[in-house]
Amino acid sequence: MKIKTSMAIAAAVAALASTAGAETLEKLTFAEAVDAADIAVVGKVTGSSIVESDGQVYTVTEFDTQDTVFGQVGGTFSVRFPGGRLQNTLVPMGEVVAGSPSFFVNSEALLLLDQSADGLNVVGYNQGIFPVVTGKVALPNDKGGMVSLDKAKSAVAREKADK
Image (cartoon, rainbow, N blue to C red):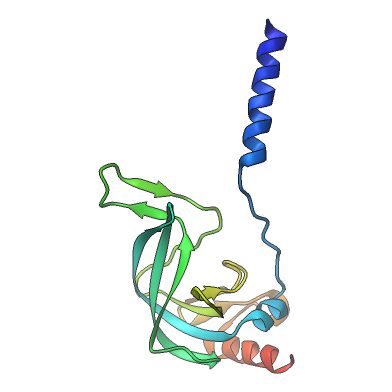
């Protein structure tokens, strides 16, 4: 009886594992992330909203453009990431997605964006986000580590020009 139960559990686990969706995110170098970007912009978060689309929950974060390093973006723009919590439903529903960033109103970030048919996307899922904290940005150590926002913008512009 134990063998039949164990085999049934193993079969159920195998069936679930074969249907579970998963993605592997390729780690990008700084140069690869900048190269993949159509736009590099410093944005300030003005708000966010939660939307549902095709049974998935997404957080849409709105930004005011503070400065553009390269590419073109309007005075305001938004990016969408999977996950979030729907409040206006009969039963509150949420979805947490590993690696999805959280932005706070009035926070700033240097963002590497690519343009797609769906709108603007952050390069490498969250690898194109460089938060600005007290006027400083954490870049990879070989690009200077913690540097001023101006130096970070220059590093991004130089990297793009080298391609």
